[in-house]
Image (cartoon, rainbow, N blue to C red; front, side, top):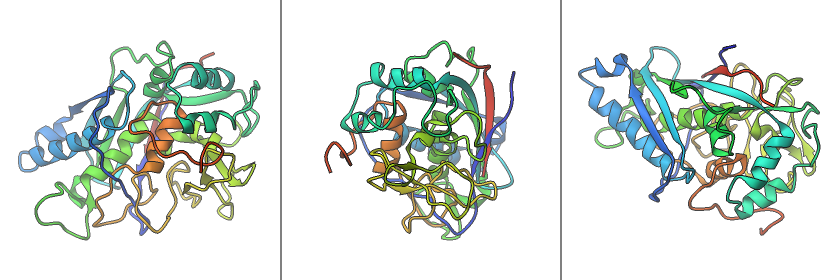
Length: 315
């Protein structure tokens, strides 16, 4: 059975940011450029270069020896969107995979300590998780993560409202193509918008829902715009980034406004040129990827299978 789930970046006055790195990684992300890009003779080179730069930034952070294929295309509305194949895994098996099938960082050890060894998940009491196929392969579930050779996801970018390159003249009213591409690539990999199953509260949960807190020892899993929700890997003690809680179709696993643009913010900030920051790398880390360099530890340490689905996320 196939279905769509959508994720995308909004055009509001909120933010979008990202911090560069230069380490080499083992993940390989292969782009397929749709005819909407290859036939754009004026902009094709700049668009492809910007996307390849975004891919290089993500690849520099993730060590898992997996291959990921993503189709990229131009679109005429919104800012960015992703369509991603997903599958289900029991919460108990996911926890087991996090323990046994990754190189555990200090942050992983802290995060896993907040996950009880139960059949039901600690968020809403159901038994299953929803994960993207690349994440399933990364945590040692190649069968569930098999897409039969098809691309793992499709990303659309409204290039007409982006600065195609970070060099040369910049239009302060436009968004950064490289940043938008990184945002959507992260979603295909299973963080950002694809990290949560909200606004659905009674079925599967996403991997970042396990680390969505409203206070110390209290998880937050609600669509209430009055609720507090933030990313924490130590049981809510340490607030890393606010989760979006604005509703209105924006992704709940994206960041809410923190005053400084970040890659996974639910709404873009024109004129900014962010790269992946430490909180976004931490998100990759604790959901099951091996990352480099490892983020500084926080909190307690220092400071099966359902049918294959296609999820589309829009912004």
